[in-house]
Image (cartoon, rainbow, N blue to C red; front, side, top):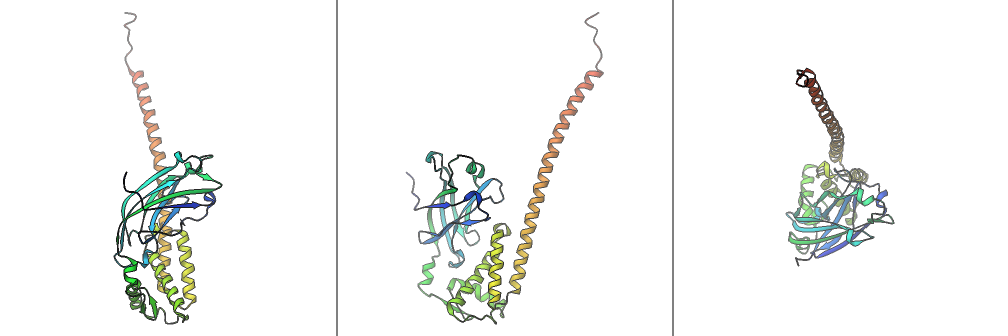
Length: 297
């Protein structure tokens, strides 16, 4: 037998067919000292009629610079009526890092099969996914830094050392950012700064990776920080740019889909016309051929 996966978790998604969220997350789980979670697009992401499913390093923004995790995984869509009919997909060995903290597939499981009547994949509205994860190599452990120095002071904010560089650069570029920040409680200050750095991390993702829910939550977080006294005009402008890019992406995808459908229709019409031309050519050829009198001469 091959090497066994060293972690197995079951993610039960309730009311799957009626979910309105574009993107959902599982609870965190720990494998080889690293925190992970699953996330999915219940209606699909970029690929119609498929459940999109991914494995991701949780809280990847708080890990030490240069961190990497090599892992493999399998995802099983559980058939709750017959285990033999369960569907399994493998995620090959992949490196998880800051620029690509999550791996999976947009076309993991077909929604038509999941939602089919009496398919067995939905029972009382619940969908069950079993994930098995094997972490092969860990580079950059959170614990290695936290045992040496728990926090660092950056402009009056107590932050984890892995956050210090990003926060320092931000204060260099926007020195007035916290000049009117009102909370004095150290824990509140740390919480707000974590929220700010997390928001910046989200915005650093490509527009394709950011969902509508992410953007709504980003505006809510931004409003909360502004109300607390942060000066974030520059960040609000960046967020507006991300929204604009996201809208252009969606419009572009819709336009492209329409063009592809139109092209498909044109190709079919051309094919039909070619068939008619060949038929007509045969009829013309028959009509212009010399008559044969072999049968009467």
